[in-house]
Image (tube, rainbow, N blue to C red; front, side, top):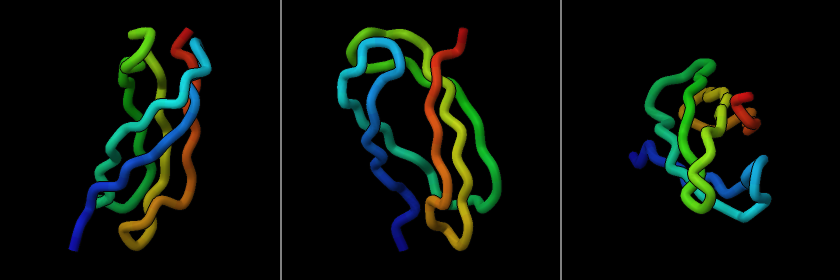
Length: 63
């Protein structure tokens, strides 16, 4: 079973479409900071996993 998921979304800073790999191996709420691959600004990613599937996702600027 594959536990990685590619999530596409717009950067809250530059509004470019980007993608990031999310690890779906652990159920629950997760939060971490990842830099935008276009403008290099830090993005706070918050997501929930239930039964190894993405059930909620938000991205916002860290400031």
